[in-house]
Image (cartoon, rainbow, N blue to C red):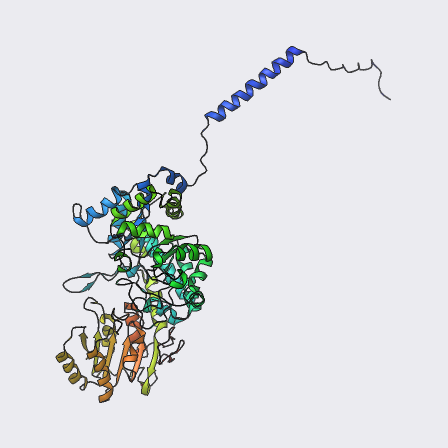
Length: 614
């Protein structure tokens, strides 16, 4: 039972606010809203545009044109005031170029020079380099004369065709990975690699062992693995040379090659590796100064300058949205036809983004600016290419840090772990196509009289150096002889006389292609010397450190070994294979008509320590 007491009073009925109260409340609310609006107006508006987009709108027309130019720079020591120094800094400070293509130099020289160039640029420079066989393709093998001292440098891999001969995509990936790591360490962002050309013409004077091989699908698979290695390690892979330079017999440095194949053939062979690479996410492509009428409406015009090829086929049909670099615009296929300004404008009209190595930087800028001023190129079209360049720089985070740490180079570039990968590729690639009387592996008798004849270009001072050094470890009495293109007939006569005195003659060739006249680069006297060895019955072998097709000049040679490149790794691997110190299990990724087919290669196991000599 509840206690007693007075009951609670009923609740009061709420009263409606009077007019004065409502007015006061409304005024208070208005004041609060005005305060919020004022605060928002005073707060800075957040710019959601990317660095590339913000930068683009700040550039003048001349600066936009400069961003699309990439002149050539040598990685040498160029002191202030020198002609070389002033040329480059004029490009950067006055003409506001967007990047450079770096050529030969040691890793420290290249890195220091690039840091200096970057410091003088308003916007970070995009740096490219031809690194088809790794950073060592441009940053190794510098020679101090006199004495021919190898100054070392970055990792130099065997040729891409050597990688094709291994048949191992994982080695292509590793080559791409190391190329990217070493390139970024010295300040290079865009390795112009890999070559995606299908080399199916033995008379090709420009591609040859630069290609992975002759099978379009294998070229695509190896290329994609290489591209992954590059782009997963901070650099931008560049497939070249679009739409395919493999079936040409003219060097585009000196003329305009014409490929007459129909569209169906181009789709199934030449374009196949590029399409596969585009589908896999390749970031850049380099054009070829070749004419393909079936892609170009029947017109014989360089693909670099063709809207049908670069815009309709590459960007439209094939779906490529990356950055398009022209091949070097000072090559004869372009330079003989157009002045630098006109060539640059035509390349942009075609669909290219970056004008590589224009014959004149100032001429190219003037041509582009004039073309926009006269409505030949819209500024919107120009902006698309400039934005691709700026976005590439942003993806590389160059807007945050454009420099490299010199103290890190020796920990990253040319280190033993990287050289070991180059050695693996070189060893796995060694391919034996002929081996009469089981000449290889060699007996390795230390007292044997062996003569090693090396054919090389006069400038190739490393040709034979490592090969003969490795042979001499087994044959201390090795007689090493060098011959060149101008070696006299009398000297060859002396070689014939000496050959009779030796138990074995090894002929090694350090050439990669055919000359501009379309004939094999081996001189007639050397070919006759090899044939002479067969005639007199002296045991002999030819080792090609490059062009695989040379055997067609001496098909009766006793033994024919392919090492695919003259790199240090390839020279050492060839000697080891010949002496039975490692297995021979490479298979040729290209036909050698009419003698050998893709996949041919004699397999020889490594000779055991107690095995008898053959």
